[in-house]
Image 1 (spheres, rainbow, N blue to C red):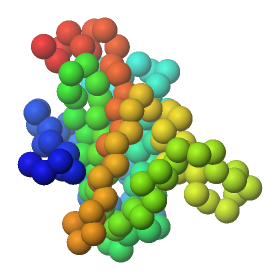
Image 2 (cartoon, rainbow, N blue to C red):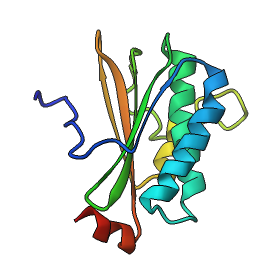
Image 3 (spheres, rainbow, N blue to C red):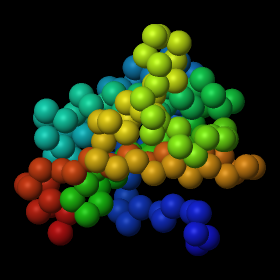
Image 4 (cartoon, rainbow, N blue to C red):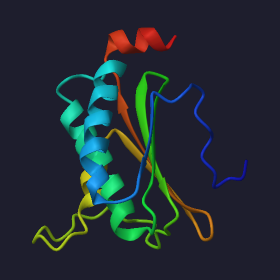
Length: 146
C-alpha cells in the first residue's frame, strides 16, 4: 500500500451502493439512514450522517462522470462512509474554509467536515477520488465491535 492509499475495511461493509445520477440520491439517503441506525449510531447524529453521505454522493454525481460507489462499515467504535468515483479533486483543502453560502454550490465538503468527526480525502489522477467520513458510535455499539 502506498502512502496515499486508504486501507481496505477490516470488516465486511454494512452497505454498498452504486449510484449513477441524481435520481439515485433518495435511495442513497434511505439506505444510509437504515444502515446507520442498524449500526448503532446515536439517533441524534443520524440526520447529519445521512446529509453528509448525500453531499458526497451528490458531489460525485455533479463532478465525476458516471456517479460512484458508497460503502459503509463499522470500525473501532466508529461508523465509516466512503464515497469513491472516477473524478479528480484538484483542491486538497476543499471544504476547509467556510464557503459562500449564497446558493451557488460549493458547500458540500464543508458541510461534511462540520458534521463528521473526521474526513479524509484521497484523489489521484487516473484513479479517482475517495472521501471517507467517520462518526463515533455510542457506547453500546462500541461493545459490539469487540
